[in-house]
Image (cartoon, one colour):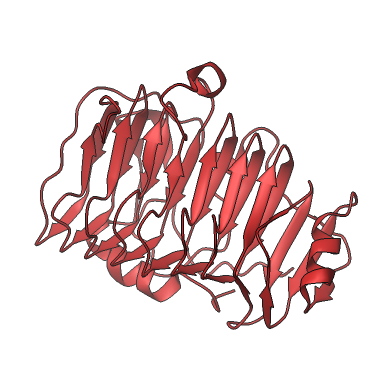
Length: 312
């Protein structure tokens, strides 16, 4: 796969959960991996395996479930039934702007090193992407709309995940991080996820809703007319909400949600247009990686221009 690097910016060096150095604005989408999925050895998916192109559900399932590393190019529209397993060391990449998965979803369970890029997910019957007991996963430049449950849910001791440059629209429960308040035995010290440069276009809740993960990094996302709330930090979580653009979003972020007690949430450098001010408090652990941070007031235009399918 060819990487295009259209965005130039000096990497931000994270010294602590409240201190950064050097963050000049960028002007276009980056196609490089950043955030938690760079850790633990990094995320390369199928690596240099010779790409195979699939256009049917049977071919896609067979390629995804192979024990060998694979780069799988999805062509056209493929209808899946239920949640289909993805094996380790896979890159699943849509061809062009029209590649889509409908009806079902991808079950990334008990594996490592998976990349999902440039796919349209529509009308899924459970989750579009379910990540559990898995590490080193990158979900990038996809579009999600009109599904039943979570668009991208991360749970059950998963770790080292990045969700970047995706567009979410016409959907309710967008992204759950940590499925239950009773699962601390598995989840403490895990569920470390980065969410950056995603576009939430009129979605309702869970952008994300976080349990236990600390630090979880939510930066440079565009929240446009979000219905219920943006980010919720609950149940021992620590969430850094940084450099995001909130527009027409009454409740951009808060601590506690439903029956889950408040977690910690640090907010800095966010931009608000016709939106609430949010509820923050507590402290968040330091981040181990460097990253490029756009100026928050530029995020709406940067993300509108770069998020979703058809940009690779």
